[in-house]
Image 1 (cartoon, helix red, strand yellow):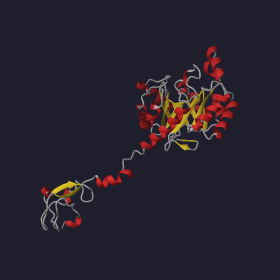
Image 2 (spheres, helix red, strand yellow):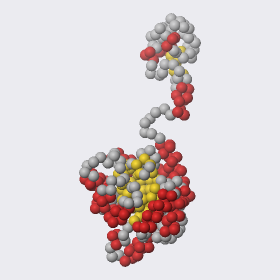
Image 3 (cartoon, helix red, strand yellow):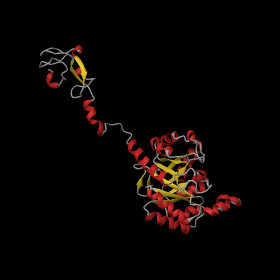
Image 4 (cartoon, one colour):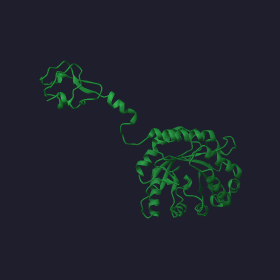
Length: 336
């Protein structure tokens, strides 16, 4: 999946999920973008919504949503500010109108776990023909398969070519370590081969996000805050602060470097050992010229400069052209 200028198949795409941790403070949101950019994340993500399209007439919920809400114009300014800080901006829409607006300012979309079966919204977003990331929290494999089938239907069975992504996610705040279930990343990767697979992390600390790289995650989303004790809003406590986010980026880059490629081949650093650590067929005793070699005449010693173990049939019953000394490695020129 290519997101902006980054190909997630070649470089793990790291998202600082600011979400609503700005709590409606525009200047704080800008500061959070600056700090996330300084931590070298690839993207910052927000949430865009019309409160009534989420909670209807729930007055208590509406009050909090309005406290967190930014105007479309403020989001435009945040997108412009992020561009200046050289970090990609995008936001999760929670309604169709917000999706239409966001399509004018961002190159990628994210569907929240709670909306992964909100098909009217998903269908609209797919019509923009941009990369789409879908979290799979609160979904078992049957629902994920249903979501996939609907994606295929909305795309008229066209190949996804990894323009769509599923993020493994557990919708709890925070997620206990023994329920992070990182093995699901590999499972999803093997099942949905035409989609990119990543991880949206709600655990405390950095371990799960870093370990997800080894499970195959190519997109990592981690909540971000400037202060875990900023308020009693739950997301702050499970978020990474600026120092931790910087550490996360560093650890993920190290992890993906360690991961390398799936192909098993000899690495540059071990090429010498492939010579000095391997064995060759050699003389088990002094052998006179003209002698026919028997198995009892052979030993296997280092380095690997002659016939390899397993190539005994190339020397057995052959006559030696020269006198051989004990432990002399056999060469083609020694045999007739």
